[in-house]
Length: 544
Image (cartoon, rainbow, N blue to C red; front, side, top):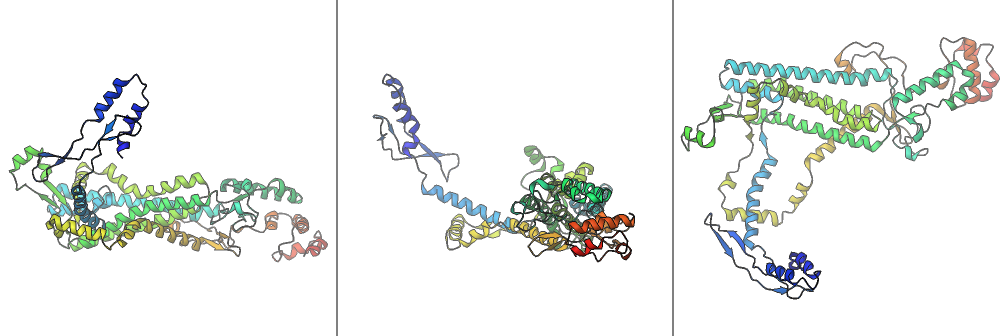
């Protein structure tokens, strides 16, 4: 460390040419100056004393005549002071982490709907505060309507529009393209094996499927050539791990909002069930009011204090029904639909964008409050003081020696197991738990596991009629579904044979198909088709 302290100067002296003795002597004079260290006097504030140090001049190796001094190391009292500061601060901070505060969201219509009516109640429902309380509930219902509507139309896309587009559930289609053709999840929705060159987005894949099927019906005798030259490819995941990471980011965003929801429940359960005032006028008792205002630059507004306090039982029930329950329902619905939406997204760019865009719905309450609330309502919410759920009477009255002994016993004794509790992040474990729950829920509801370990989509049905019912959009209730699914895809021969085509043309199609495919049964064929004179039974029997 001494060499490192003056190493730069020593190096400069060692590389100087022989004629630079003046510069070398200047460096020596600078390095030879004594080091003085000042320490604050503990008992007398504002006075300082110089701590003597042992100064031993040791020549720098390689540079004759250049001397330096031993570096100063702080005495043990410095370490004791740092431990005392840690003992005082950690007692507060860890208690705050474990118990926290009881409050409301200060930039949200949910918090305003709870706090402003209580301020109005404390002031005996004055006209101005009563108007602000009514406005807070108007903004609350506006926010609930907007969030409910957006959730309904997103679910409409998933439960109504996607089946009409023939959209199967993504599950793990294409998740293992690099392991194909022998690994799981190597068969796409069309039944062919995945390759990177044949993997497309759903819009491209559905368009290519439509073109191939149309060509098959127009030119049934060219079915083999159409399958080769009009190959539709497959639709599947572009990156499985990107989807997993985006789902983690999305869950991390919604869990933060869940914390605010649980904070509202803590407010309703931990505050006294009594009509305590939420607004006070506090005059300092340590000095005259006018002098205190002049010294600190206060106004009368600074002497008005807003704080979380108790509320009557009726208000607790009302806040639970109109604020807490809707907030919980919106969180659950958005987390469910958002996770479903991300799991059905195959593209990398769409995943990255959607994982952050979906959390926008949870921030509508803050947008409504920011854009529509009055200055008075914003001031009340910003000035509202939370109610601490912890008390520290022992730490406040504890002498320094006791604090230091407690700190050394707890932190350096046989309590190192506390390190493991602090290393494991509880919020991260909650996020991983929520992620695992909704992942399992998605696979259970929409996917089936095959014998080779692949996860494929369950059957998808279109509704016969689409009434404009938000509950039908969100939960899929009251929908009259068709008898035949749009996925799995129909039998390839059924795609080539049109219901309205002449019987003879379908017979020719069947005869041609029996020469190329021998994997499927034909129990669904109608008797008039089999009895048609153009049916070549020799081809059928040769295959079957």
